[in-house]
Length: 342
Image (cartoon, rainbow, N blue to C red; front, side):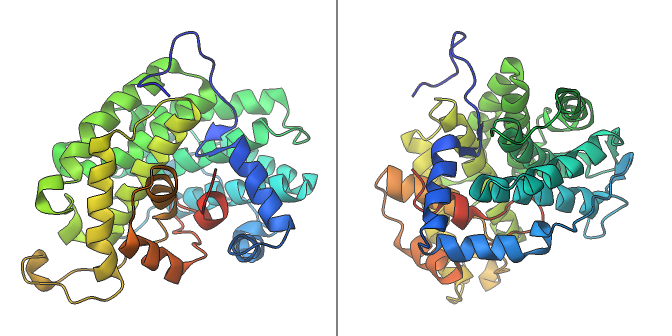
C-alpha cells in the first residue's frame, strides 16, 4: 500500500468500490446460503431494481434544483444507475447473461442521450449518479461473458467524461463538505473506470484536505452536518468510505491514523442517537434528525475487521438494521458487498 498510485502501476479492475476478491467472496457466501449475505442477495434480487422488466428513463438534460423537489431526470438517473449496478451484481452471482444485458441496456440508453446536468444541484446529482454508474460499468466491463460491445463502452466513457466529470472535479465551498465528499467519490470512481491518472490524483488530494474539515476529532466526533440531519452525516460517511475503499483496490492507503480516528469518533458518536438514545442539550440543542441510511457497512468493515478498531455502538446499529438496502441515491446493497469483506 502506498500514498499515491505509482506511475508504473496499472489500474486494478474491477476496482470501483468492489474488487475481484470481494465479488468472489459474496458469490461463495450466497451460493452456500450463508447469512446475512443470502438475505441481502434475495432483497436485492427481489427489489424493483432487480426486475428483468426494469426500463431505463434516459434524458438529454438532467435538471436538478436545490432542495427537496427533484427536477426532470434527477430521480430517474439515480434510480437507473442503481438498477444497472444491481443487475451487474446479479450477473456476478448467477452468471446469467440476461442480467449483464439488462445492465448494459440501461447504461447504453443513458449514454445515447445524456449531455449535461444543470441547475443548482448539478454537482451533487452528477456525484450521486456518476459514482454508481462507474461501479456498474466497472463490473460489467471486467467480468467475462458480459459481452458489452466496445463501441458502447466508448460511448459510456464519453458520457462520464463530458456529462459527469466537469461537475464533480471542482472543490465545493467549505460549508458544503458533505457535497465535496460525494463528488470526490464520483471523481475517483470515474477516474478508475477511465484510467485517468490526473483525475485520480486530484481526487486523492481533495479527500485528504476535506476529511479533517468535515469530521471534527476534537469535538468528540461531531461533523460539519450533524445538526443538519443524520442523513447528511450518513452520506458523508458512505462517500468517505467509498473513496478509501476504491483507493485501496488500487493499492493506495487513505486510512492513516488521523482519518481512521475521525471516522471512528463520528460513527460511535452518532450510532447510539440513531438507535434512539436521548440527545443531550449540548448536541444540537437536544434535537437531532435520526435519519441515517444504510451507509455504514464499508467503514465498519475497514475499521473493525481490517484495522482491528472496536466500534461497539456502530456494530450494534448495523446488526439491528441488516441487511442494508439502498438509499435510492448512491448507496446500495453494502451488507452483500462489504459485510466482513476480504
